[in-house]
Structures are given as C-alpha cells and as structure tokens.
Length: 310
Image (cartoon, rainbow, N blue to C red; front, side, top):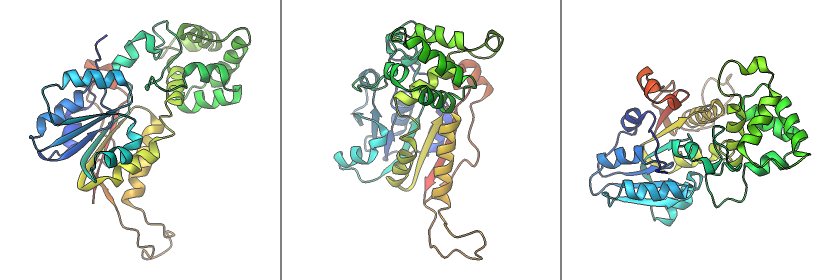
C-alpha cells in the first residue's frame, strides 16, 4: 500500500515556522512527507531539511516522494534522540522544528500493522518495526491494574476497569493474538447502551495501547525540551498534538521555558535570575478549520502550538 498521510494544519505550520530560505529545518515526524515537501519548497539550495521517522516504510516512501530534492537528509530514528542525531550530522543548532504527533493514515490503514480496530490483523501497533515490544505484550502480559491505568489515562476510557477485567479473564483461556479478538472483548465489556452512541467502542482502548507500545507520552516532555535546546535564536518550533495529555505536556513545557522563574509569588521582584528562553507565539492552540475537518475528519482533535527561541 502506498504511504499516504493527509497533512494536518499544513498552511498553519508553514506560516508558524517562518521559514528562512537558507535555514536548517527538522521534520521530526516525516510520515507521508506532506509537511516536508512544503518546507522544502520554501528552501533554496543552501537550505537543508532533516527528515526523521522511526517507521522504515515512511522513510522509503518519503525518499521516493521527495526524490526531486537533494537538500534533505533522511534519518531512521525517533525525534526524542534529536540531540544525538544533530551531533552525528555535525549540526549545532537549527532554524525550525516540526512535530506532528499523530499516527499516519497509512499506519492506520495498513491492516498488517495492527493499529486499526477496523481490520483483523495480528496485534502489533509498533511504529518502529524493529522494536521487540508490541501490543500483544501489553494485552497479554500487563496486570489488570496496569492495563486499567493505561486504558484510563491514555484512552480516557470510563469503562477501563471492566475492559481490563474482561481482557485478563479472556487471556486465561488463551493468548489474545488479533485486533478483532480484542475488539470483541472490548464490546463485551462495554454495556450495549453505552455502545449505541459516540465513536467505535474500541477506539479509546486501541489509542491507549498504541501510546503505551510506542512510549508516546513517556518520551514527550524530554523531547520537547531537547528540541527547544537545539533551536537557534528566533528559531521556531511547531507541535501538533491529537491527545489532551500530549497537548498538556507541550503547553506546560512551553510555559515553563517562557517563564522559568522559581521565586515564590509573594516576592516583589525576581531573585532567581532565570531568564525566559522562548516566546509562545500561539497563546491558545491553533485548531483546524471546519473546512479541513470536513475534508479530513482525522484532523478533528488536532491542536497546534508554536514557540520561538529568544
């Protein structure tokens, strides 16, 4: 299947990056290369784009899609390793960084990857296929308490306790191997009256397991701080989130780096001498337009936050 991904908030990201033609930019989540292609079109031959993705399929598809450009460096890695990646490339600072934390349409639509509750496939959900830890491990090895915590926190699922209970009960009979086996367990756990309205009953649980498998929340705070560290003065960072926990982490890191003062509120003046390191460009998150949501329903929960290095 061709690697496709409809880039969310594309124009808003390009405007937010405030691209310099000869600058060095990082797309930390290359995906289907939609954002990358637009960034490259704004650069001249002296500008460089570093495209990072932990999914080898994304890297290969992007190589083809961006074959007309000679000023892109492809890196198979996770953006959380940005400092090491830049160090290996002998690059000290960059002019802008883009992170799109959503799962690509391709990953969701490619049945064998096991991301989707709409296709029967082996339970997998690994963004990096080289990883040894998959959704099967979460579903079959986690304790009831740990499962409930993951589903409740990362899926914001109010039936987390019952779903965890039903999973543990079923796996005592046999290992849970496929997405549809898991979907059936989730449907059995959620009362019929609660399944009649709203999204697919398995949506929140699948999201939660995907986040756990790929450590998406766990790595985010350090990764955002590292990205801010490697920005040049006036460099911009644009981050698109699709989950309230992700958005909260980005929002809090931005606030802390904009106002790092540790003095008690009662102090009349700051004595800790902590200086602001960034300026938050978007005080409120930028949301997709009604037109974009209509055209691409997966953009519905997207939020874009932008900051500039001082």
